[in-house]
Structure formats: structure tokens, C-alpha cells
Image 1 (cartoon, one colour):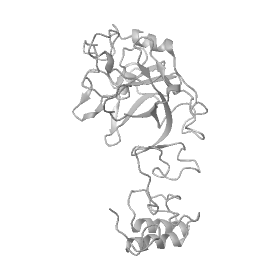
Image 2 (cartoon, rainbow, N blue to C red):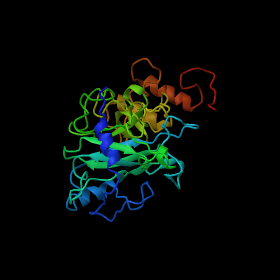
Image 3 (spheres, rainbow, N blue to C red):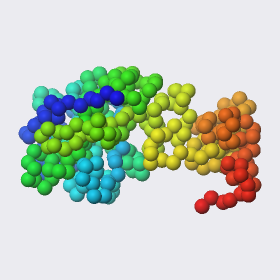
Image 4 (cartoon, rainbow, N blue to C red):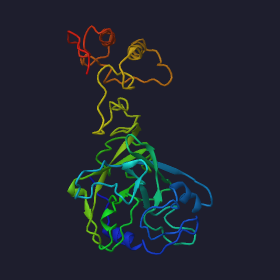
Length: 328
């Protein structure tokens, strides 16, 4: 796994927090050392620096880690300085990027930390979306928790800043990340991919100024609903977003959930029947070839459809065993 971490960039980043003003939008740094209501969103920043035009962009995602009780390894990102009305499981996640549109304002000044606000698009799964330029000039991005701890260890806020190590998003899909072994939604950027924290110490880098650990990350294709995996939807190894999901917080769908809607019902029987008849599935439906093989014999057949029907009639369990036992 290739690490894209730069101590020099980290040093420059911390130093840059001091006195840069956002002249292109109504934003002024304050002494709060946290993201404020005036902090621009990604879209606002890009348009301010691109003549009012959004231009070509890519959408990348981030899953905010759950708080760890008694955390002493700075894996918990939420704290009293950045918690929102949504509770301690959430905060205003921000992003900073080196190079490309938005990395400097029209007057030539650099961007101050914490960068720009991102969107919470999935509360249940704590998924945030960032819109960043897709112009080929945005090589490195850094997600952070909206807290600028500064460089004074005597300040109360100092130990609460969190950020990931620099990550490459320019042509990195092919070869840079082991979690993306084949294919690409876009070979020039990481559009529609999600960055997941990796706590492997070999991927972490100690910040030379704060002595905190900036953890590394893995990239996956984002399928939606908190699901992400190693294969793009165009890959023959993709078997539906739930079956292909590697998010450890998710339970994979059980056999019989053919259309991956998290329920086993007659629609799943219909999907198998359409598939076996060679008919096109109704709009909005898709068949998961893994969960459709209900009996696990390596083939999708009418026996699988019959198994589901017997299960729904409470004549057997989904694995075929009898007598039927209602699920807890």
C-alpha cells in the first residue's frame, strides 16, 4: 500500500493557520480555532476561485469514526469543541486540499486551516461528502474534524484537533491503493470513492509539530447507504451494494434477499423468475447473484425461488432446515 504522507506539507499546513483572510467570500478567521458558520463550503470555495463557475468536480466521501470511550490514541474525532446539535457522534467535518482550484484565493493568498465544510449526507452511517476540483491539479487532500488546535500545547483546545494523513486523489485509483484492485470509475481522480481511516501504525505519521498521529486511509468505491467495497459497479465481481459491501458495521444480507432491499419477500421470488426466464427486470430492480443462490449450490435455479416461497409460508427456514423457527 502506497503511503502519501509528507512531513514537509504537514509543517507548512500547521504554520499556515495564522493570518490568511478569505477575500473571495465573506469569511474571516476568528480566535475560536474551530470551523465557524462563515467557513465556506467546498462548492462556495471553488466558485469563489473560479469566476463564479463550479466547473468539473469530483465527489469523494468520508466515514466519521464512532467515538471511542476513554480514547487516548486520538481516534475519536468528535469533542466538546466541534459537537453539533446532532450529538457527540457527529461534528462538522472539513477538508483541505493542496493544489488546484480553491487551494489559493484570487489574490494569491493560501487557504487557512481548517479548509472547507463538507456535507453530512447519511446521518445513520455518518457519511460526509466533499466536492473537490476534477481539473487534474488537486493531488493531495486532507480530511479534518473542523478543529484548529494551533501550536500552543497550553491551550485547552490543543489536543482536540484531528486529521488524516495526506491522500492522493489524482490518478491514484490505478495501483496506489490495494483496496481498489481493479477497474476505475474515473482513471483521473477518485470520483465516487470513499476514504476510510486505517489505524495500522505502518500507515500513520507523527506530526512533527504537535506530536499527534495522522492516520492513513484506504479507498473504496462508494455504493451508497454506507456501503463500500473493492469493485466498481461495472465489475463482474460486483454482486450488489449490500453483498459487495465490506463496511464492518454492516451485516451482509442473508440468502434470499435477492434485490438487496434488506427484506426477503415475494419480490425476491419475482426477481429470480425474471432472471431464469431471461426477461429484463422491472425498472429499479437488480439481482444479487450471491443472495439469489439461496441453497448455496453455485447455481441460481427454480429451487432457490421455491426455497424462498417455502420460507415465506413458514414451511422451512431460509437455509432449508425444518421445523421452521421464527427469527428473533
